[in-house]
Image (tube, rainbow, N blue to C red; front, side, top):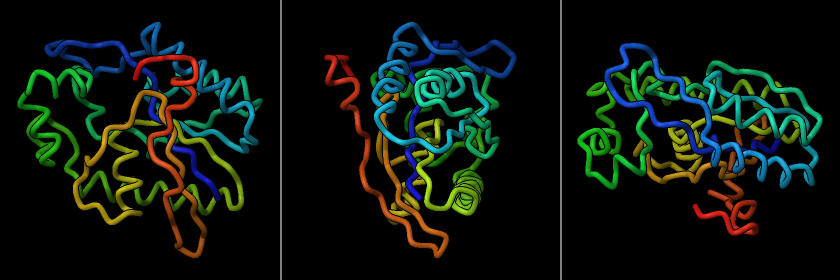
Length: 202
């Protein structure tokens, strides 16, 4: 099968201290990114679409489903490692400001901000990927999720030990080829042609 890993579009920023679980929807720019990706994918034969239950993933998957004529199935196993956080600060902002949380994310000290530990998260993602491979043999499946999920899923194939080793762009595509025999390979990483072709900045 071919798994098309899609990171969600640009989400709203939610400052710390809300006291409730942060679940941002897409910004206007993020919604436009999702529409551009949907138009791009309409030229591919998509058999199924799965997505994380978080709003930013659901909002990204919806136009793809409409464009490709395929229903979306929510898969809880695709949720991000910090899904219980009370805030959402984009990774690029954390990196730019040299925020302590950015270094903790890179180092895998995710318990410092109340997230799943990398080993726990990796085990869950590996299990979810295996289930998808078993369910959709020989099909092309779009999985709309999050940067951490994509890092771990592809890192497991490439033998990368760091949980976060690259930064997927918003609505980026990364392709995995997988079989039920256990053979998995990465066919592409961080495709952004659907944005660049229309001069959308990364």
